[in-house]
Amino acid sequence: MNEQSQTFREKLLEGRFLFGSFMKIAHTMPTEVLGSLNYDFVVIDEEHAPINRESTDRILLACKAHGMGGLVRVQNGDASTILSVIDCGADGVLVPHVDSAAKAREIVSAARYRSGSRGYSATTRAGNFGSRTIEAHLDQQDASIAVIAMIEDPHALDQLDEILAVKGLDAVFIGRGDLTVAYGETKAGSAPVKAASRKIAGAARAAGKTICVMTGGAADAGELAELGATAFIVSSDQTFLRNAAASALSAVRETVTR
Image (tube, rainbow, N blue to C red; front, side, top):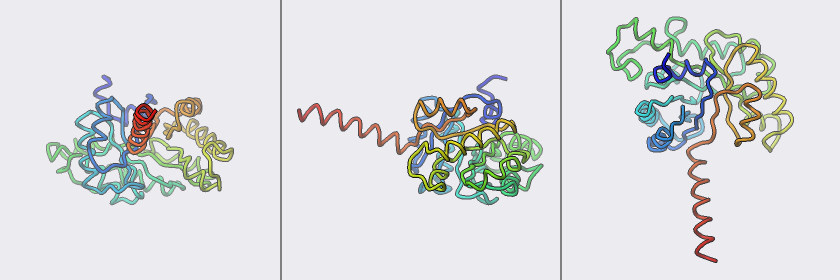
């Protein structure tokens, strides 16, 4: 299949190396910039950023303008929250704190029509505004929505095999930030978080699930790739802006105040 015709979910399931960013600014332009740089996807962060449904809708339109995958980290995994973002045209959801097989089944069900309980409407961006038949809409959406569970609670590690056995769960995200805090640590790369990351990655590989991660830089990304990660969130729009602004200010200030 031609790469350009593949959905984000197909690329994810194939284990292609994919590179993206969290989007925390409630505007389309940061996403447009990353699209112009050929990022593979973005994750619109409804959990930790002041982004509402209307902002999400507009940012997803920017994703489609650049042929870039548009995921949403939802605030929670309830059916109405998942429905709202996939009706807006999201290519998938990143769901926080999936800590049981029951929770995994719930989020998969919310994202699927035929094998789940997704509420039906085809007069949405997801349904190409009513241009498809019911059958075609169900086929297209069930095949293209990626469901990614964030594993970020220590007690979830005791249920990894059950979580990963849930049919229709496409990938897991290793939530090292929350794991760090949950283990009472304050620095990235602590021993318990590394051990948890290895356990999650090993279980995901054994279950044939794609592994997604947030990187702390190139060296960290290399280590995570060795664990089997293939989908990498490399930063956020806020961090890109802050780092570039700090670097430019420092360079100019140093030059003119010598």
